[in-house]
Length: 317
Length: 317
Image 1: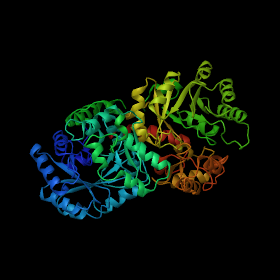
Image 2 (image 1 turned 120 degrees about the vertical axis):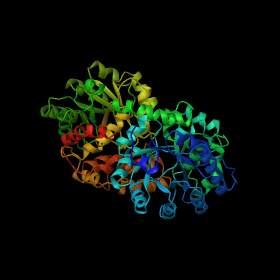
Image 3 (image 1 turned 30 degrees about the horizontal axis):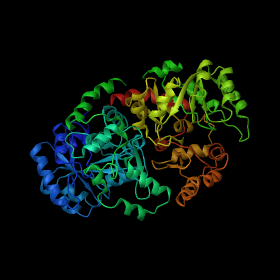
Image 4 (image 1 turned 30 degrees about the vertical axis):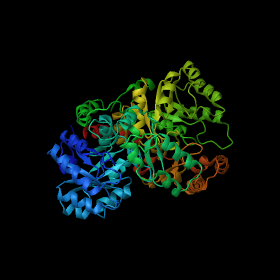
């Protein structure tokens, strides 16, 4: 199995990172991924009640993960959330060594994280943002293509074209994300110049993930055309096609305003879809690669399957 | 360099196909690509006047290509154009052995082409269409992702997720298209299960292509965010961002009807952009990979560069 700068940077065996999926990147999942030699990531609001205290929730998730593995794991910090400063306090106090930052300006918190001894990987969706993140001192960038589930960049650049261009633009290591679920995608990402991959949807459909069983089964049943982008007025977001996306599409067609769309989405819509299992009414973030995922397995099996198939895929080239 | 079923099927040395770009896939380009051991493709309207006779134009282009190379080359047939039947007559009469079909139902013309001894590769953008094409007897499919320049499928599936799913769904060889311009993309496509690649934009920026110099220079100058999708109401189409796409975007924002948009586009808009060099006023089809293309070279150099770099990319895996 390939070792890259990402392995050395993060102290892991295989350059595979689990996405920090909102509501569902829980301690048990992160610990299982890390135990398998990859890097598990905790979302601060993992498994949390809608009105819960995200700061205390993160502390409790981190402590649970520590009780399950001695290997390194990380935390995802959406930069723009109001509690971000307090979440960083928890990360540093609890001795977490890796943070992936997303959805915001890396200038805001990178210096403090680095002072706290934390490695920072920032999610980017264009060359300009990758260069900015490097300038602000992050250790690596995660170049996330338009194939990814959840919120995407406004430029809608797919992984196949985003990764090589980001690799050419920066000197720090680049992790590819979006559209990857197996060894084929892993090897393709490395061929494009990435030094590792981040996978979200593949890790949702695992036993350890706290995502609702309805969501996991929806991923397994999805075909190539099972997901779509909605919300281009607010920010393109990829999810499984359901009653919720049909309603958004209809609103978009009749020219509904951004305000009207926001009011319809309301609060907790993605928790509803992903954690509560209301997979028609709720928002169900899901990557475009769902169609290749045919089984709910353990998180360790996901990692081992890539490690085991890696040489076979390369040998066929 | 890798040999695949595509090499045997088409009688070529390297599994690389040049896209049959409307207006600009001319005989000189196709012949140069074929001379380099790949497969050149002629567009029936290559270099043609707007009011020209497309059937006679194709015959003349084929004869010119035959005068320039003894190696096999092909013709692209957009299935839906009114003259398709007559174009097939010319293909068979002139002894062309390969046709790529696109933009229409493969059931319509595949039997006649096969009877005429022509190998048929059909362009698809989803698993369903790939299965349909295989059922109708085509020899291979070209799985074209949303990264590609020009008209794309309504499902907007990127290459990274489309290719492995099409490969799983059919037994015939799959050629990957969309987002590929160099050896990195070639190897990535093969890792995803493709047995060859088709490249359009990379071959536009060559000395032999009849595309206007303004268009070629625009490709060289393009950055990662240099192209965009317009026309989602009519069919998603990727082109270079210019005054034309800005106008389409503005019309889309104010909710212009499909009829109004069609009237604005009018006739010959893509000829204007690509052949006449009116690169602001015209439509300039271009792939999302344009940002990695930094030089206008010969078509033979494009092929040789992939062949020469192939082993180095694989060795780094």
